[in-house]
Length: 363
Image 1 (cartoon, rainbow, N blue to C red):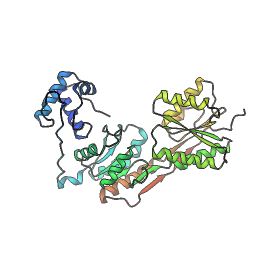
Image 2: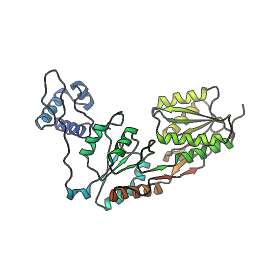
Image 3: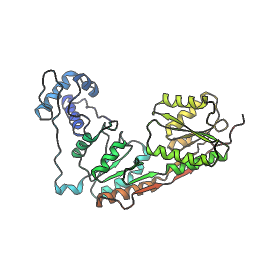
Image 4: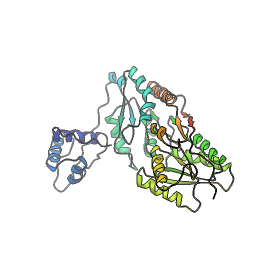
């Protein structure tokens, strides 16, 4: 998430924003052209040029050369003084600002226990998660933000591997990619998916559809494994259909259309994020499709507004207090010793029974 300059004293605010982008690696050695940069910042040409001139005077940029784009002077943050190391924060690295209520609750114990040690938990959302080779930007990020430990959330495989290779005190608040040896605490999606699949099988369902992010992440692969294990109990004629969602309403609607127009359509649907459920409820209602008479559904995600759905939704919820306690224990051990004793912890999800699972409709 990019932090744009505030409107008071716009040139100075633009300077501050550009310094942050350079420090965190969001801007690399060569700056974009002025047109692209001013559009990205949301400022005028004169404001941008004043800011660039100030950055040049302060030594952040090389002098402008005719016909060439401006170059960044590589700035290495000074290492923290030894007396300050005990106060270094723990940094939560994420592709977006942490605003989800569940995530904040699960990090609550960590924040409280860090505060007792005189430390803080800070959240960073640099624009580097899409990069295939983020190594140089990560080096700058770590130099610009000295930390007692790093918490990675929804990061890419190259980012997980880089932190593992650097030997930095790092904790995963997510499933690790294959052969990434970092400690983690996760919700046990595979077991929850297996349980959901067995419920569908007992009601006669043999084709189950699962809606996932377009990006193949370890947590989603665990969900598929759990569903496939359940389907294996039903014999050779059972199968899993995977539909993709890029977090947009239009993509989710297209995936639902694809699912319901298939020759052998799924009679049971599994959702992996809460907003998919809302889109599904409104989509089927508009087409006169009844839940669970025409289609059964279950959600592996949860949210507070699920209590307002009718019919009551069947879903899985984490034990937030248990999750929060385990995360705090892992992070504090990492901060204090540089390692953790127990590498991986999978927290069982609690099933909340609803009325959205029923028998297969008769043809």
